[in-house]
Amino acid sequence: NAVVLLGPPGAGKGTVAEVLVDKGYRHVSTGDLLREQIRLETPLGLEAKQLMDQGKFVPDDVVVGMIRDLLSSRAAESNYLFDGFPRTLVQAEKLDELLGSLNGTLEEVVLLECPDDVIVERLSGRRTCSKCGSVYHVKFNPASNEDLCDIEGCELTQRPDDNAETIRKRLVVYAEQTAPLITYYEAKGLVHPIDATQRIDQVRAAVLEKLG
Ligand code: AP5
Ligand code: ZN
Image 1 (cartoon, rainbow, N blue to C red):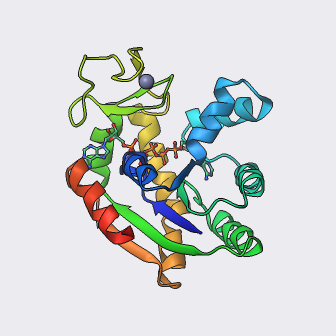
Image 2: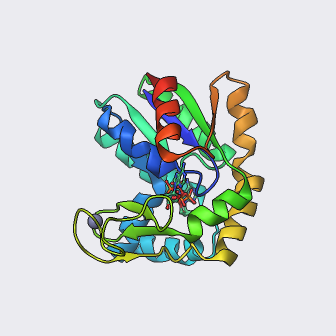
């Protein structure tokens, strides 16, 4: 079975996912999967990097292929938490098909609602550990030792797509291509909106309450 975390870039999907993993969900972030391909310098990664650095989407068939491979290799596992997928109507329909063929169901869509000005501030101040993937914020969730990761002690970096210009582009792409999914899932009665402008602990608690 599966839960989808839906919401604009920077609404806090990855941050919320961290606590759901502790509850036994298997976190599947297509952004993380793609960045792993970039790190490994695979052909898929090289193609994806061009698009991601410009704030554009990677083609549906590429992303759906990754999810199909992942689900088929781990069909027995139960609770998937999709983060950053689906992002288009085509991907949403494919996810329904894939889950259907595994006799799984999409149980909830948690919608993190957050206005653009808050998002710009969050993404501009985000710092990520390139080694373990831990996510920080210079103001809202700082590492204990300035720009060093609490877990690995290595230097924190800024994602190449977290500059003001690319953030604006990602917001436009979200509004055009991903926001229509809200109506798609509302028609199925699956959407649970959460006010994502609250503090991190409050947003996490609200999501845990919905899924608990
Ligand atoms: P992806 O990696 O999925 O990025 P995204 O959706 O843009 O989301 P982010 O990871 O930027 O934000 P988030 O919501 O997880 O926020 P976070 O928790 O980090 O995708 C990147 C790219 O890959 C796409 O642009 C596309 O090119 C491609 N791609 C991926 N999936 C695809 C797909 N399915 N189809 C096609 N292309 C695809 O939080 C953000 C910051 O805010 C952090 O610093 C955090 O500490 C802070 N923060 C979080 N919550 C709070 C809070 N409540 N209060 C204060 N600060 C907070
Ligand atoms: Zn780290």
